[in-house]
Length: 142
Length: 393
Ligand SMILES: [Zn+2]
Image 1 (cartoon, rainbow over the protein chains, first blue to last red):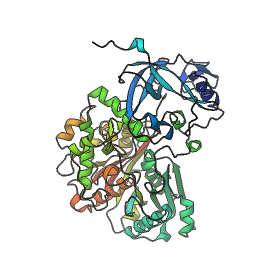
Image 2 (image 1 turned 180 degrees about the vertical axis):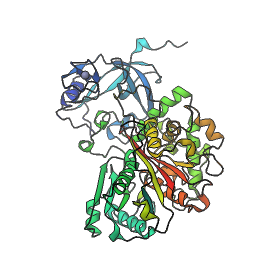
Image 3 (image 1 turned 30 degrees about the vertical axis):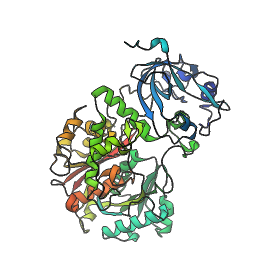
Image 4 (image 1 turned 135 degrees about the horizontal axis):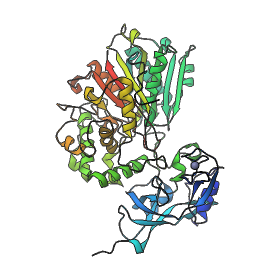
């Protein structure tokens, strides 16, 4: 693991989430009453406002909705990757969940590119989201 | 409260004075000093004295100086209203709106709205040096990925507009050029005398593709202060009263999970509907507009959201000169905006709008200048926005 300098500071609402990322799993708040997903993890369901919530692992698959290519980074841990692509990925579970992360792909990003979450540990009980292109889902070049 | 609400105290409060410091890359003084100078200038412009102030209101997400410290320093013993709102440009006009409500309700008589920051020389808003524990919003969930700078997030939304409507870099470039053109002859502007062409824009380095360097506003040291009092009292003061006809809070699209699924839709639309309803004024009655322009793309998005263009229609209108200060149907960013005048977090937009409505904008003066729209950041990142409609008394 490469320890990052810039890290989130987990609290009671988020420690399990960041810890799961460090173990390679992407999770979201799941409502036991209405099945709605909420991400980032929150202490309340954003649809029914209930608190009967669990943090559940998502499939981790989704499609790129938008992306940027970072040419200047102010985040020390990321400077070695410049230029890098940050993808905003719409999660398969729910169409209003967009999760940003660095994209690992041999081809340039495009809308609809299928990706799989590949979380990485960046500190003690802290991980971050990396998106990996699903090679078998890429269009075949002519 | 519904969009059709009309109980806003339309035009009961007015702007009677404006003041500012120099806008620079290094003020050489503290934020405290900047605020004091802008406030003194504003009350003098209003024909009032510091002793007349009974309210102070500001906001900030990086560098700031709080109302209680200023009130003590200025010897104000009779404070009737204060507001120190956390956050950035999205609340820039909510603070002015709140001041107008306080004055309209008779809670305070003279509220000074100010913003002071050493945004270039001291506390830069680039994310990496922001302490994560102080960030109540969603930066915790994107900072480790290096997705921390507002430019990156807005570029992400700009891309979604490009994918949906075919918007191109040169379309955003025309907004940068328009802003710069309006700043070149503005004595306050950091970019005074420094014109920009579309070729310059396209040749500028990529920062967060699709954003070039010139899609991004200027980090600035400086302060602006605005004196709000009752319209009745403002009528006895030296300048044409600039009435706060309507103000609105709300709207916005945050990063995730608030029900929005189409990120190319302008998040300004919701707050636009509210400010029009509260003011009783629609887009066809607006003479000029100062849109919150931390970046180029938000200007395009607000032109759509505030009802001045159909989705995807802005590029042609830019080419047709519709938004030009000289001869355009709806002049915008008449001072050069945050992109080219300076980044005083949107309060400099209010300063310019007041000069325009008074008819004091000299060679920048637009032909029709009775009704001006001033907006806060359209509601990305924070998830909410604000706006005011200003009308000459
Ligand atoms: Zn629920």
